[in-house]
Amino acid sequence: MTQPTPPAPVLLSGGNPQIAKGQGDAPVQAYIAAMPGWKSAVGRRIDDLVAAAVPGARKAVKWNSPLYGAPDQDGWFLSLHCFDRYVKVAFLNGGALTPPPPVASKQPSVRYFHIHEDDAWDDAQFTAWLTQAARLPGEKL
Image (spheres, rainbow, N blue to C red):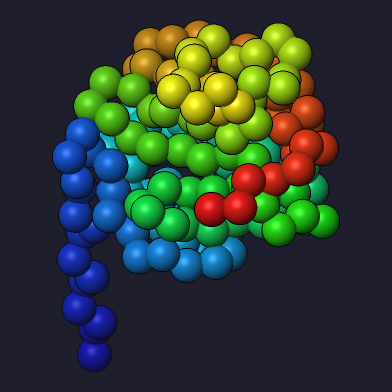
């Protein structure tokens, strides 16, 4: 007997997948798989870069966004969110990174990196941000 196909995740405003909150890799992988179109490849690339730069990184989905935390901390250093035209990567203590990610937030400690479909982005710089961010105290969300 074949199992029924689960329904496709609902895409919220801006195309962000609605994924049930949960701890661990499984909900993050479900989010990445549900990211629409080209954004899913961006999510996989970010997840792979986090895994390489921060071995043992903790993962969770809250508020329909994946979160990444250092393995030895309770807080979070990175989150993702889909919008119509880009993926917003939030470095939760990005104001302390050198150089800081390019997009400012209303919160002085947070900095964003927006990834559009045809953007070329530097894995080395992104990895440097990840390793710096994972050494800072994580944000409790």
